[in-house]
Amino acid sequence: MIALACLALITWLYLVGAHGRFWSAGPMLPSVTSCAGDPDVAVVIPARNEAPVLARCVASLLAQDYAGRLRIVVVDDCSVDGTGDVARTFQDPRLIIVSGLTRPSGWSGKLWAVSQGLQHVGDAAYVLLTDADIHHEPTHLATLISKAERDRLDLVSEMVELRCASAAERVLVPAFVFFFQLLYPFARVNTPRCRLAAAAGGTMLVRATALARIGGINSIRDALIDDVTLAAAVKRGGPIWLGHSALATSLRPYPHAADIWRMVSRTAYVQLRYSPILLLGTITGMSVVWVLPVLMLLLGTGVSRWIAIVAFAISVASYVPTLSRFRLSPLRALLLPAIGVFYTAATIGSAVDHYRGRGVVWKQRSYQRMTS
Image (tube, rainbow, N blue to C red; front, side):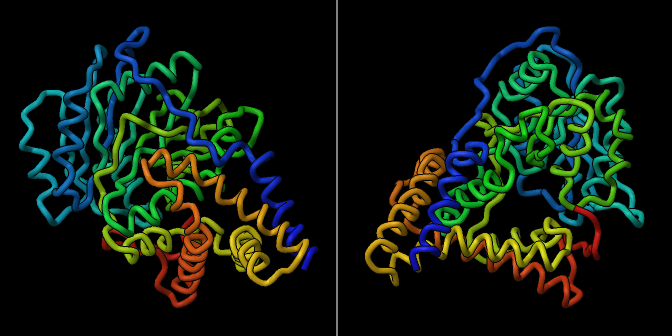
């Protein structure tokens, strides 16, 4: 009992003290209204069946307080809900609407749409890849460009503020961000000498020369976890930065726990490279981190219970900065072990779907054993 309790405590002492400050609520870029040079920027928005949210996204980009030349390319990716019609309601010379072609074999749908959009960016110095469900505050683009120019970065990405309105979202969405940082500690991602790379797909500003250096989007065309794959390719040749955003918000709702389960299980086993060994390691790790402290607290006695109490207290405290970012009560941190079990179960469900032959299904498209 004491040995198990010590294992949980040592694990948490390492995570909190030496795992890239994953528990931090930062870093976050301060808003700026101008940047040196104001280089030309092109925004590419892949949009498949995004009629309910696309108008707010496009309107927010057209309203950017940015002095440089801006071009916005919306790729209607074979939508059936009038997404293209929504885009065409905007009468602005900066907006280009592309009717997407049928996806060829070997491409993920999103990256095929992005590749078609990139054909219309001209000689822009930067390309902002953003999702159709993101609302951008007026200073967002200038803030991203300023960071890239000041620190000579090849990629600047932000985890946008996710919607947290329904009961399920308030319980599960902050933990999604927390677990993402646990997997990809931002401090390590932002250290050039560290090989770890990651990005968040809602906001990825890429230097055009860096995109050309990696061979363009074609070089990662089959990636289902496209943001992390792009970041890894770019970081091999230049520095990148990943943080949180106070200037971009996701409009995508996840009203029920089942919606979040589907979002996680869609690519969780892809993230593990379809490896049963990595799946077993993930289950074991999650059990040590989330389940073991609670079990030892409930079943242990004497010294083992006190050690478990300390481990549990550290785990709960590590989640408080994330909850504060979402303006939620720190008492919700007590639910973290149960939430960890939920995400572990969704990961197992992702593997089960794979072995049942269901593969990855997203936007009415099915993918079988494509890369991460």
